[in-house]
Image 1 (cartoon, rainbow, N blue to C red):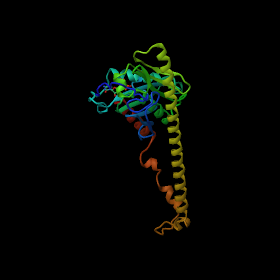
Image 2: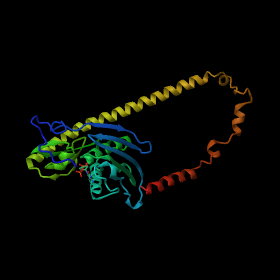
Image 3: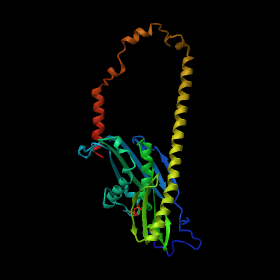
Image 4: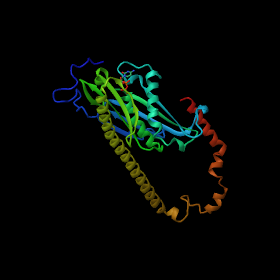
Length: 310
Ligand code: CDP
């Protein structure tokens, strides 16, 4: 751990990492990075590196957790052992349970859970590298992974912290400011400005609390713009890929109709027997491979078994 710095803010009003007091750290976003998740997002917030994966709406296991009128939201925040300076013991602990609970609550009201009764929406967070503000970075990533999964929401959730160092309010604390500062207040905010998470460590006067909240809200608005842009870029690119695929397919089709063997309905080997008659004798592909409703059920229950191991 670094030593406590003598001063956090220099004579030019800049912080030790060169930021202004109301400046957030750089954010990099990649949406749709995991093939097997319904939605995913990799996000870097300063030196924090976070992976978020969303599954659902899907069946609830264990079944007694299911709600008749709405989907349940589950949030698992996990810190990798290698994500922090001193190796973290793997598995859940009090801190991760607390972070998971408050983060779940930050999303619950924003998701249209009533559209999916008796189902579950699962959010998994892996902290790959931690550098203060992991819960806020994780919420930003989770919000985008939920959007990527197509979960209907009232808006995005954006999150950042405000704190106090050298008796001054600063936005988005870095590691030293978090360790040695006088206060740390993470918040999460919906697109329409509702506060969905508010925690506080340390001490702020009522005035500082009011100003700090305003500062953090400004930070969340900036983050929202970045999240929105990342989503738009992602969907524009996906759209372009789909159009490109379609045009490649149609070119291939055009090319294939130019094949003289096909134009004349003559197989390459020169056999000129009537194709239609032959096709009648060919068993249906699904029958041949034994794909029936019964087997489809098997596939679902296999998935279900897997889920219970999570
Ligand atoms: O990460 P966040 O600020 O949301 O939560 P925190 O409990 O205030 O933790 C602040 C920082 O302490 C984390 O971001 C990590 O960098 C570090 N930490 C650590 O080094 N070892 C832990 N077991 C937990 C946190």
